[in-house]
Image 1 (cartoon, rainbow, N blue to C red):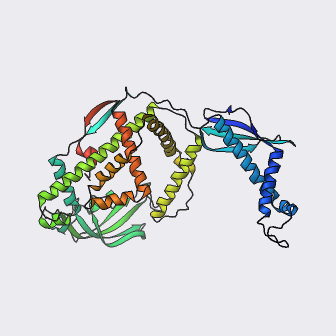
Image 2 (image 1 turned 180 degrees about the vertical axis):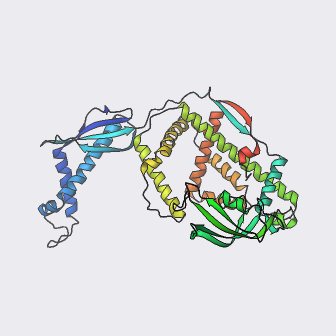
Image 3 (image 1 turned 135 degrees about the horizontal axis):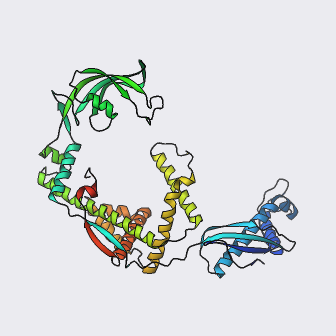
Length: 436
């Protein structure tokens, strides 16, 4: 029979407990395992199932003892935490205590508990809610960006300037000798996009087609090529072509190319406005969500089990390896756990806070909420019913929607209790300088 001692507190979340296993109980469990093995073992010189117990014990005794011991100790630990109503985080570390006798063996199990969380009152919390109504100016700015994304170029009989497309030949020399990677012919580039070093682009600006020149260039001290970092070299440059940008108008052809079958500019504007409203709503919600989570985190400082952080670090490392593979990189590049510590800790802490909040405030996502969210997403597509089926036929996609709805429930719960101040934000602040 196995027995347990009183749980000892070794840190705010860590506990230890002694587990004593009866040698007789262990022997009995080991004999049961050996007898079970003997019925199916195939050993040369013996018929199947007829291997003498002595031979089975000689060959498999240690294995049977280890398996029996693991089972007994594991069961004893499970009974102990159940009896004392302990919520264990992660797996216990079980080690021999070193005072084995003929009658018993003693082990010490070290484990962590989930923290006891007392949620803070959020009624005094202050939070700003970003607000922005899409305007006609926002639509026009976005249309301009779309037009610039489809810019064309035509030959320009003038000096090159920013936003021009140029075609160049160049040859770089260090101490009069060409260096690797320093030569190109018929090289196309758009000035001002940072394709080449600023000093190189400055040498091109002001040049007309047919111009040739030689200029010095000093590479930055932190340049990627160590042989060139901080070095001054010479470039022979020939500007072969200068083309100015031609931004397309909202013609029927352009509008159709944007996916609007009618070819009408007003229909394109309406489509852009609709998409912008959806995108602005999405980005504002994301900001608000992040702000709410930061407030909840700050209001509820809790200790976090190391075991859960280690599990999260492992998940982050696995995710990074998968991402590397998808990018065509080697997935077996060594990763250090400490690289992920800073990300893992707040994720685990926030997960514990949210789980407690959702349970206590009954904020779990309902089927109706999940269906409504899927319908909302589907309505933005051309064939909404197909989109609904696509989501509902995959458990992982459904789980993602459930998590999204649950987070929205948390945000709504928080906003209904906190002191919320609406703050107007401009279009560029929400969307970034590129608009889309």
